[in-house]
Image 1 (cartoon, rainbow, N blue to C red):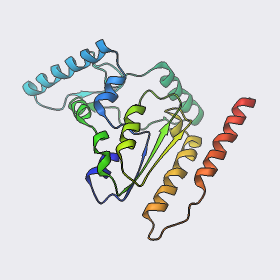
Image 2: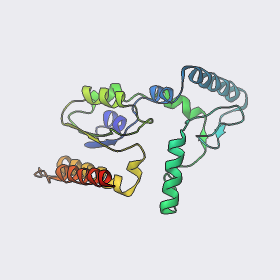
Image 3: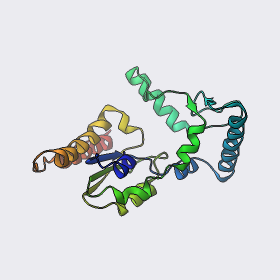
Image 4: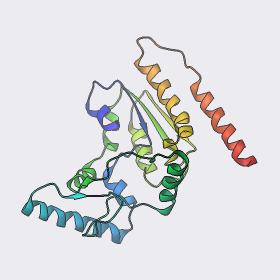
Length: 215
């Protein structure tokens, strides 16, 4: 959405929740130096196969290696455990994205860079919700760099959540009100006085922290 707001003036206000803003650094941040070079080699090999046999080669699962050893999105055991815990508690998958991924799209992800377009959003309104907990998928440096160069009006909320907390109901209860307040303020026909949602969210987080401490 940050990219869309930068290039499409029809977007009047945007909320970016734990955004991925630079595809190259995002994919590289999940790999060591050797694995990154191997990943680029595998993409080049896939490009040669595409030239010879045509487009359409896919990964059946973005987090699992294909027959050539290519993995799009490496994951950690902590993330796997979080997925399992959510499914056990709710009976539903944590994420509902399709499993198949066309390999060519990974090259497009590497080309994607919304950080250096953030200054084009103003005078449209930008709100960013960042996470201060365990988060290995959303590079904070890119979020901070994009927010720094973005013009006003803008707002940065940093909430003490882990990267998957935003998919749980209680995590959504923290983030969604912040987004709603931003849209109310910047999309309404008339200026609406602040609703105090930020204070309410801070109170919820404080109460949760106290509960966690006592238990």
